Image (cartoon, rainbow, N blue to C red; front, top):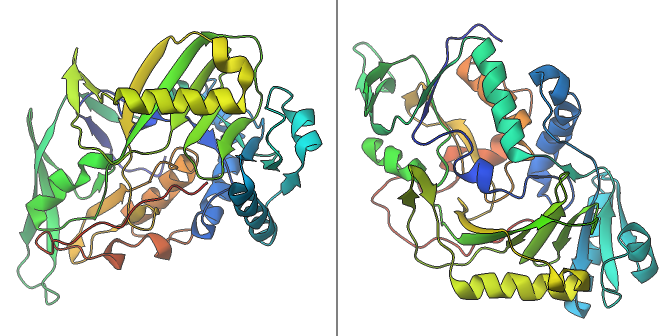
Length: 374
């Protein structure tokens, strides 16, 4: 829309990885305060995306209910509500009766929960398809099934700052030259940054996702828990999606039929089923239609990196969304537009700067234990 000529290079297909693996929540509650301006703007955009993208994306503000399953979690929820009220978030603390009014299927053993009525969720596949179609109407070229093999940069004579400049991408179908490149490459970001001797400390815990067939209405709001080891939502088509917390295990992305696959361990599947049955007893007899795994791109502080790469011109990174990037996606798009056009971003991004971590590829060291916000 701003007049730039754009190409998208996609190794598999849009929504093949994180954007398709996600629970697809659009929430303010439980977020770090640095992300609140982004989610506030994003919700403004989510409300009009159907019209803007000329397609249904399944967005609904059905609320977010975050449960405390024991006394320790109850203290976490109380603190969450207190702190986020100070940030002017529309959040309230519910007792057992308040929970039952909003979600009668929730176990009466749950004593306390937070509730944000303006949170919601969307259909991730429909959203990505709608963005792609809108982009193509504006002339964006999508190179699907093309893998990026290397970033090339160059020095320029007369540059007193000794900067390097983005030159091209070497891909499986030839070289692409451009003035600017955005690396929105999730868990595979460091595979490309190594070409310029840089790194972002990213851990890649595995999340298991379980989907049921169509069920009668079980729940309207998105459900989470205080320590983030369970979340679920009922899609508009009636299917219920459950997700676990992240497990620090060694696994690789494999391919099946040309699509990326992450295989979760059996014990992780068992754990998430046990947790959901405790929270919603009516789920005990539900059938399972699909199980899949996904990888989170977790940074040490669980905040994304959205920034131009220091000492380089024309290289921008948007990664490390740590399991909660889908909801802020529309606002991140506006930030990236501003960075590409060398404008001051309309939203604050200092908390997401590239150089807040050690970024040289040979620094070594350990990655802090990640924790998902909310």
